[in-house]
Image 1 (cartoon, rainbow, N blue to C red):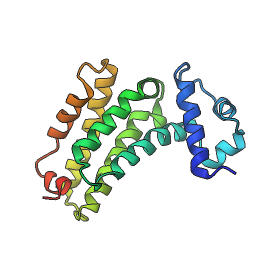
Image 2: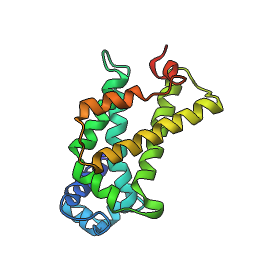
Image 3: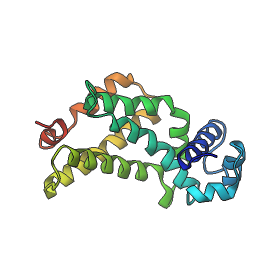
Image 4: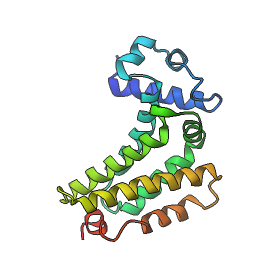
Length: 184
């Protein structure tokens, strides 16, 4: 029997595969489910709708990248590069989601919130548990700003190599956040 996580992964893989040839706003829950041999009922046992799945299919790999922080030799720069490479390697899916979601389901909005939450949780894990209003604003500024920059980078055809772009994103960490991010 499949576990919930495996079922979610199957559905996400199905969505990503379908999004290579079809606009995400045109893909149905029935198509997603059928493509991986599951039923619509199973789909709805795990996700509210396809937009919930779109966000999960993005968020889960990003969380896995960030969770590696703390491993020997794995730095903030590695995590930023890993996220940029994830965007680059899943270009068709990400671009499809960026271009073909709108309103309350707008992908970029959800991605920005995910990045802020991941950054806030990471900083809390480093001992900065009660950020001041200023640090909270800087975290939002950095998270939302980098998401917008990555979207523009992707929509512009990724004119800068991922490795170089990741260095630029790391250089943009606000000075007042650096002690929390780097544990200084």
